[in-house]
Length: 349
Image 1 (tube, rainbow, N blue to C red):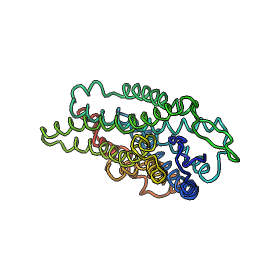
Image 2 (image 1 turned 180 degrees about the horizontal axis):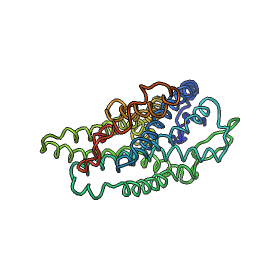
Image 3 (image 1 turned 135 degrees about the vertical axis):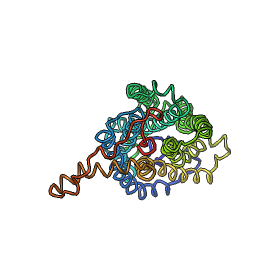
Image 4 (image 1 turned 120 degrees about the horizontal axis):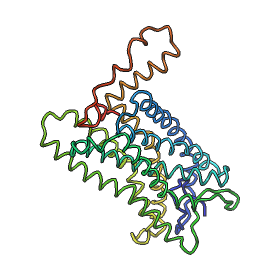
């Protein structure tokens, strides 16, 4: 059976009828879209990475998590050119790259989810348990929890890496999941449930618990303008994550359990195939959204971005322009406040 999508999250389900137009549409639509996402996402997240390293200097636990979130997106993004070529033609990169890129893809996804969760918990501790946060929210603890998070993301990605392989299917080479025949249904169900539990249910539960506590705390306080800003960025990041990935999680669940939901007929299968393609494409574009959120929500980030361009980009091309030499990087720094773990930058990176 031909693959209906090139996503490493998609498993080769037996549909009651063939739907060749979905694959044809994917071959036309996905390559240019993935290329656009790759370019914009790589530039945006690379800028975030450089600003955090060169300007912010990673002075807080939040900085560490934001840096790892950018790394997660970059890990996800570097696989897109390969999936773009795969959608347009066939898999020509061999079995090793098939497994490696599938691993990058899944680790980028799960790493992104987990670091968004950590950022939400970080905001919760900084505002609801401010005294405890003074001791707990350190750079060292941020590095330690980040290492643990990457290990967990690796374990979550392991089944996909193990069972994904490149092989010749008819006249074309594919890169897709191949579960043991006697356990195929069990593994497919497990992978889908894992995706929904870790990618949708867990962040939703964390978000509800943390923001309920944050809102209650802020309502009891006065003059909490900075803390409101500190919440805004992480809240927007998490909401946008749900808007982009929740539809795919839901469609994947419906597609896996077609019989349970009474969708195991030709018409429903075709609709699910199209929905998988649309929601998958929407989800993949998420990796280039976070830098846009920083630019629009984070006032501090915009100042750092301006200073970064003046200091490291424009000066190299216009060394005789005095206007670009007058503003020092220190101008955009502000006083570190233990109560929020960082300055106004909590709201704007």
